[in-house]
Image (tube, rainbow, N blue to C red; front, side):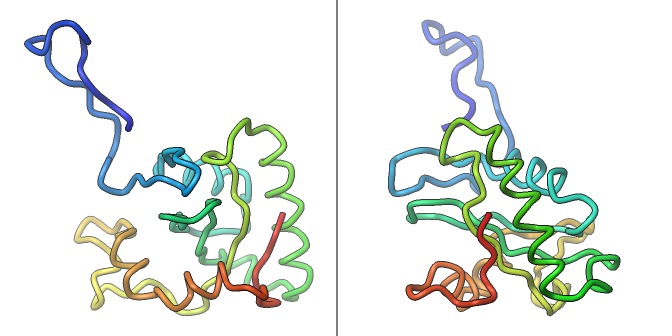
Length: 154
């Protein structure tokens, strides 16, 4: 788990906090996924096509994204957008060394995040937990076998 004692031999030295650990999760491989880092890296890799995303994969073998397309991406033909995202994710994943830092699948969201459903915090940030809970059926769709044709693989 990210963070821990500042000095492993001296608890009085304090602890080191590394992000919102409540959002981090383990894959079925036992590897921790640092949600904040993966989200930021994936959004940067897919720029300018994604507006925002939430990381999926808790108790699954691989990490994925539920993502909102950017306004520019919404102007693209669906096939062209999927192809561009496949290419960007594949290039991003090439530079990653482990399953916890790779994006294995992506599903684009059509419905914007809802402030009324607490998917957006008072400060204007995406509430990862609320999105995943409210859109649990889409998470299942993202990982379904057989795979749905709207799931984008790198």
